[in-house]
Image (tube, rainbow, N blue to C red; front, side, top):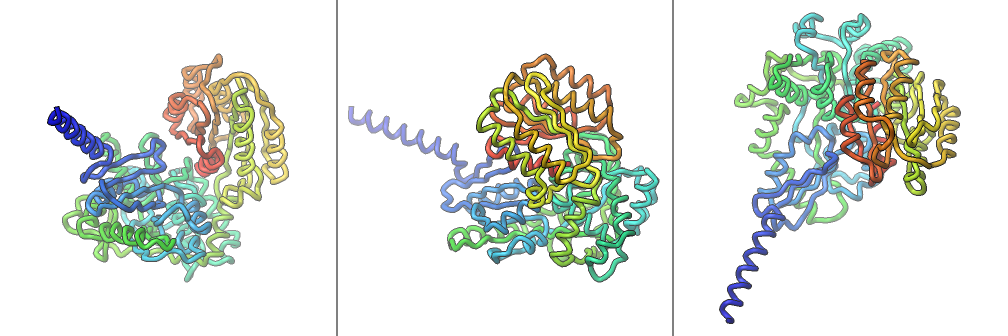
Amino acid sequence: MILKKRKTKGCLLLLLVFLVCCLGGCSSGGRQQNGDGKSASFSSFGASETVRILSGSENRELEQILQDCAKKEHVNIEITYQGSVDIMRTLQEGAQDYDAVWPASSLWISLGDTEHLIKHAQSVSTTPVVFGIRKSLAKELGFTDGGTTVADILAAIREKKMTFCMTSATQSNSGASAYIGFLYALSGEKDTLTEEDLQNETVQEEVKSLLSGIDRSSGSSEWLKDLFLSGDYDAMVNYECLIISTNQELERQGREPLYVVYPQDGLSIADSPLGYVDHGDSGKEEAFLKIQDYLLSDEAQDAIQRTGRRTGYAGVSEENSDIFRTDWGVDTERILTAVPTPAADVLMDALDLYQTRFKKPSLNVYCLDFSGSMEGEGNEQLVEAMSQILLQDNAKKNLLQATEGEVNIVITFCDTIIQVYQVTDSSPQNLEKLYDEIRNEYCGGGTDIYLAAEEGLSLIADGYNVSDYTPAIILMTDGMSNGSETFDDFAARYREIGLDVPVFSILFGDAEREQLEELAELTNARVFDGREDLIGAFRSVKGYN
């Protein structure tokens, strides 16, 4: 009897060890991705330290390398993805929730590290910010011969021969870098960009004309790639490495690849610095250095090159040259000379001008759920979120101010349309009045998201020339749609109108994700999860428009 007991205990012990190994990833390391794509974690069984990294979205392509790192160095890694401006703001506020930062460019560490917390910062890889243009169009425009300037690209846009997708310059490094490159080239390639250049009327007119060629925007470089693959667009501005991975997917789909065009007088380079945030924890610092050393090792650098990034002094090794294909316009022989980084105050003024005066004006239609289930805390959070966008003193903190010529429409709905408010003169005073209307709205009734979205689509189609704006419907709901309209009704209307208007949705409360994902897939948009941070979700979606 005693022997049987011991055998049972032994079996239970073996079972327990097995379960722990499975759940913890054992020595092989485990990987877990957040459902909304904002974060990922890589675990190593028995690791005593977890390093929390705040990173740009472009590093999602390196997740397999991070998983290998966690396994080999016995360190747990948690990575959170944010836009460049958010990384800068987080650093300015002390980055208490993070042990390391990994933005696309050192620029954002320079602007954000006001407390001098960053140490051990080293570049992991480099990649230039380039135009990827449909190969046949690039050839037609004469851009496959080399020597293309920003003025050449501007001419193609003015002649209506090309449009392009680009991330927001105030939310993402690739957009900011390209924009600074445009300004530098259009101002005459001086030693560096100055305040006088920003106020030059010719420069202002030319950069506005160039930015008028943007037909879709994004707050994320990685998502811009996904957008391009799901749509039908001429070109996009993005990192060379993401153009390469886009082409790999286009080739798999049997579609025309992009041709890489380097604006010779306005080229910016992302140097991907990984730096330690010093909170005085020596254990964290030691674990960070293990991660950094691994990423800079020959093994990891080779793997990073295989993703289309350049590494080390040579840039690209002979054995990886097949990734950097010359028939796609990728040139690893040329010496890449980046535009000089302007002074911090000039840069911030340039970004402010982009947001308020230079970018193509937004046409925002906010469909806001005021059904009965929103009463109370949900309504309070919604009102606070809209205050961060409509009240311009708040919006300025996150570089989300209204642009000259911007249109803001608010549709409040339940199972019917409650009110429609249109503001075509988006002055601070008018936007504050719009905010007051939202603040005084009452909750009640059921939920019909399709009715509200269709109303917004009709207002855009019937009242505006979409080519003059960057349009978007921003739908926020906390429940399942159970009204008279269906997804099929909306889809039929959307296809009938035939406009490229994304429906970005913000998930809150008990909203049905599947319904919102259907809208996003139909309209080449995405769903933002606002269940934990509704205010942050509204800020994020505004950065996509």
